[in-house]
Image 1 (cartoon, rainbow, N blue to C red):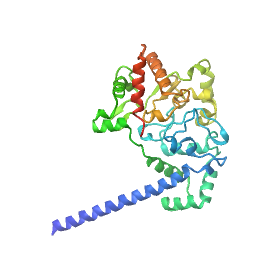
Image 2: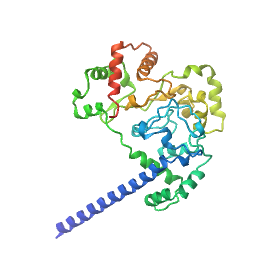
Image 3: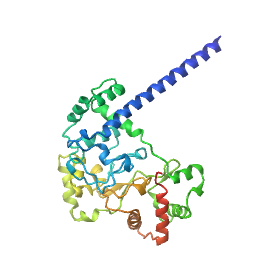
Image 4: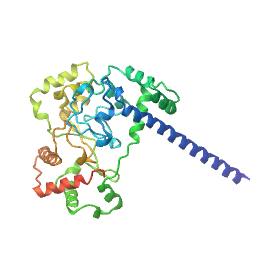
Length: 335
């Protein structure tokens, strides 16, 4: 009898657990649907024409293909928009790593003058609440149709969580342990990546993502020549201004070149930027934090040059080896 009762209790707990999982999945799906609608709604920009998807287009691997992103009224920022497909790889966000809380990050574009342009979140909330479609989706996701800041953030984060990362040919070769999926040039490029070119010292490889990021910040020299003689006034501007740092970076390309310093205020971090992931690199040109490098081949040359300076010895690849390295990197593209 006791065993019979235990079996019944176990079955009931399992059923409750399954029901809870289904309920949680349904809630997450509803929130993601609400977030997807917000992400692509141009009415949430002050010009009625700019949305989150303007800088992170689903058709361009959730980047935008521009040197630097363009916000409301055609205002340019100072940073190249990274793809959103590998958010899970990062310990911090933005090129300078100044934020760690994704729900906080997703709201900042709404109130940046060079992104969606609002002075505060209230007009955004008013627009969402006044729209029957948004209200219906938020009621399904949160139990009410009048979302607040936290609801908007949770919906957007849920949407980002649903983005399909896709699979690269290199990842298929990695997961199946079948290198024949790669060409001879790609295999030679992989050997260079992990060896002579020393790429894997920053773009660390794990079993799931392949070459990813070390989540550290490095001095690449890209763009720094322009501001090298004015570091003191630029750092002083960051220290003394009352302007939010995210606003200041996008409105002043010179301040943007200070990199990680914006987050830490440490001199050693001046001009340092986070290592990006390499997944889909062939599809997300231009490159670097400022979008100043147009082609993958040019990016390879610049990286080798500055990595050699950082190590105190040149890293020299022949033209053939550079071609092989580029071939391997393109095997990291989502197909």
